[in-house]
Image (cartoon, rainbow, N blue to C red; front, side):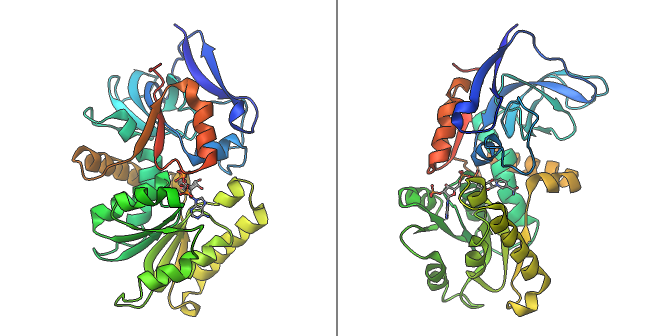
Amino acid sequence: MSWRHITIARFGGPEVLQLSQQDTVPEPGPGEVRIKVFAAGTGFTDTFIRRGRYPGFKGKLPFTPGYDLVGIVEKTGPGVTAPPPGQVVADLSITGGYAQYAIRPAQYLVPVPRSLDPAEAVCMPLAYLTAFQMLTRYRLLPPGATILVIGASGTVGTALLDLARHFGLNAIGTCSAANLPVVAHFGATGIDYHADDFVPEVRRLTAHNPGGPGVDIAFDAIGGAHFARSFACLGPGGLLIGYGAQTMAQGRAGLPSAALGMARLKLWNALPFLFSNRRAEFYAITARRTTHPDEFKADLAALFELLRTGAIHPIVVDRLPLGAARSVHARIDAGGVGGKIVLMPWED
Ligand SMILES: NC(=O)c1ccc[n+]([C@@H]2O[C@H](COP(=O)([O-])OP(=O)(O)OC[C@H]3O[C@@H](n4cnc5c(N)ncnc54)[C@H](OP(=O)(O)O)[C@@H]3O)[C@@H](O)[C@H]2O)c1
């Protein structure tokens, strides 16, 4: 039986995404399962990989992109006892999601409740898990605390706003003017970062906080020099969580700028007494999954439960067939998507 997937044979722009056909369905090896993919997430990190700039994946070429997927286990390979065939699962695959079939290690797969919409469920493994772990695994804020979300209209940004609302936190988010309604939709205060310098604006908005002006946690994936601006938005004892180097990924800053940003995080964390007890951390989902695999599974399962009970509401802006992958990447490159575009590999 023939099946389709997207391949990348060289790094570059959206044009390197090719729709390819295979004639035989792949067989799982030891420790692997074959997943029939219902929904493949797309996002900035896929474009980062497509450009050949992502530190966690540089090849081999050709490969199939797709950082996260939801599908049903069709067949298990030798030695696999769970998940069984017929189980719907989610995977943080890093690559391989843009396909009708994926062969994946069984190790990190997490069961997905049958009642969930696969397109909404696929927002969980990368975007929502990143947001959830950054919000819960470093410092648990009490209801009423304030967070700052840089890039609040993105897939991780909206997940942070959605979870902040669920946890009773106040959120301030930076985004482009066109995306201010996305931020307001989650009950957060938006700042158009093109029009205003967000640092004084955040300090003005938090001027009456009991502990002093500034937010309790700031989340920043822009990286480089931008980390210093987010750090300046922290109140005394506040925490900056860096989780990306977006300007470097887009080619708008070089590796030295990203490295300087990382060095700053380390300095702030090492010498908090010089910075009003403000600290900084760097979060990376794949590194944390390697060091804390049980936590990864527990947190993803907790998110599926929040989704099942209607406590969180991911924004799926479009559901498109595999053949739309190029135009999806062009839209992500242009910015301002305002949520997640999901590829539905079996829908034409
Ligand atoms: N460390 C980890 O484990 C981890 C996990 C997931 C993602 N990430 C990283 O997180 C970043 C965001 O991912 P995503 O999937 O949320 O991307 P996305 O959906 O493309 O969102 C990125 C957002 O950034 C905003 N933006 C761009 N430049 C900005 C600036 N100077 N100031 C404020 N906002 C700006 C854009 O907002 P407007 O269009 O409104 O301008 C866009 O909505 C990427 O760098 C990704 O690689 C890291």
